[in-house]
Image 1: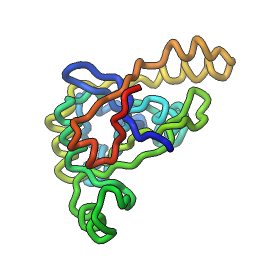
Image 2: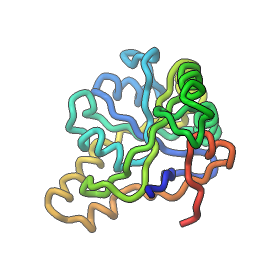
Image 3: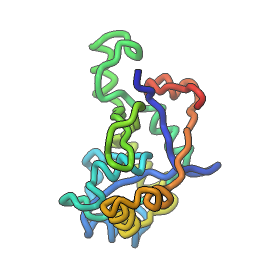
Length: 200
């Protein structure tokens, strides 16, 4: 069984999530310290607490329209609020009474979550799943206007790590990774997103 757990970089007040965009969106976000045009807030925006899952998704900043990787530090209170109002992206009988109940929740929830196999440094799947969080509607407004604390462009650091991997300097690359640890959610929120709460 693959555990569904959140590992992230966080402190008492904030948690870091990752997004990747083209140069125009990323530059405007860093300058404004929130997402502004040409970012389109009427589309679902996905945030990821896992650095390596973001690297997998963005190809270390080499995929089209994902050339700039951003570390977005947000309030933990906002992160928890988002998950408390989330719906799983696929039906799970252990969480929802029936398929129709899930469909109704999915239609109305401003936040969508899905669990995908976490990746190691070489992008091989690990034996636990990592969380992706899709924000839409009111959740995007809260994200942009209240939850974001700091936005940093970390693209060059990502490319430096990737170069070390290409040179098979895996120990050096590992030392450059952000420190991520288990993020424990309140029991009610953990149940909402079907997260496992076992201690390492």
